[in-house]
Image 1 (cartoon, rainbow, N blue to C red):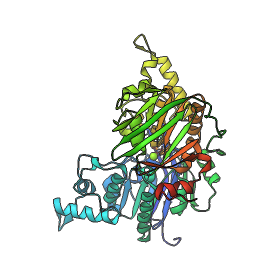
Image 2 (cartoon, protein in one colour):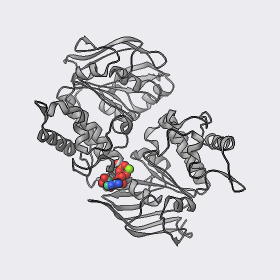
Image 3 (tube, rainbow, N blue to C red):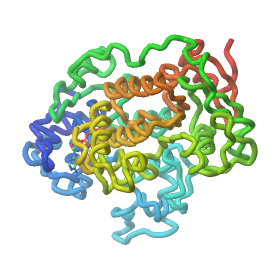
Length: 506
Ligand SMILES: Nc1ncnc2c1ncn2[C@@H]1O[C@H](COP(=O)(O)OP(=O)(O)OP(=O)(O)O)[C@@H](O)[C@H]1O
Ligand SMILES: [Mg+2]
């Protein structure tokens, strides 16, 4: 490795947006055949750096070399010609086009100089999807009809549709199940074995340990460490480089049995949706957090959405404080004090043209209007509190939401529900894309709200999160609860066993 020049070097890269210096002199060195991980808190500049690398942002200053030669990545086409492909954090697929059209968008396969269309493009896309371990994705289907995980595979197929030497993945695992993550890592292994370099961004340290060769840590737009060994650098070193402090306890302590004496707030009786989940009974008390563990497609999100009234049950009912809710009515659920922070934040939850403050207060408007007038002061105070408690960056309620980093957008959606003062909060993947330091803060906020008198029903693909936050865990497989136990009686291994096989290991 040492004798050949690095495939890529980025030196002293700077990039400012109005009011923010997103990159403030970043260095990055990537070798052919390695998995180079990029770590950093939300807003540290990771996505901005890789957009510079993809030719999507022009840097204000700095130098880039490719295989030892200075280059200018002045456009996405220039980057693509060098063999740089990017899978963005916000997938940039066109929902109204087919899989095959997306795969070859802007890069139609050519044969003797003629663009190959229709059947041949579909066949070529089909071969790529097969190589990626997903032959079941039909190239003729509309991308908008696919799941998030499938869309990501399409995005990967597009990256591989031309000659690549460096592939950048910005939080690719965020929407994936454990076995899909395995498939992703298999693909990464095949690419690096062929000498392709991979730049991998993730907030999950265990993934970095599994596939990473080296790590570069960004903090506040600067590289604070470059080329650390991915498998041997201690976690506390990485976390303190990222955050500038040590995070001792990620999960807040909780005395067992705190909820036992409280009143039940939610009762679910025989709730069913045919083909999604089997009759479910569940009781949740104030102060209590119940976690639903299971794979994508195990019915987790469907259960939350049905409790919330966004899906109409085929049987059963939902009671809040003993009063049955009108089935399939979100309005009734919200009136009764239920809040849902959904999984697909951008599509379902954010007003992308609004400010942070506007997004935080959107569902609280009625509380801030006096005699029909909006009480701007109260609204702003609430937004300020959210910004502070969730360490939002930038810490400005007037910032436009679309300019926030992925993890910070996420915090805004949560802030909205945390401030709303509901009785029952349904959280679907609350920390997807949120960095380690901010997670600890978010967990503390969730726990504090629960202690103040809130029930939480939590869905998460990250088993440690379910075990760390929940008092009680329901393990779901194919729509049925296969196991229920207090969180302290379970460990990660056991939950994964139950989730995957359902064979209880005694
Ligand atoms: N188009 C833009 N306009 C203004 N500010 C921006 C823009 N894009 C990014 N920023 C700001 O630049 C900084 C770095 O953002 P970036 O998206 O690179 O962070 P990140 O490290 O990818 O974070 P995350 O882990 O949350 O995805 C943030 O303060 C963000 O608000
Ligand atoms: Mg990002």
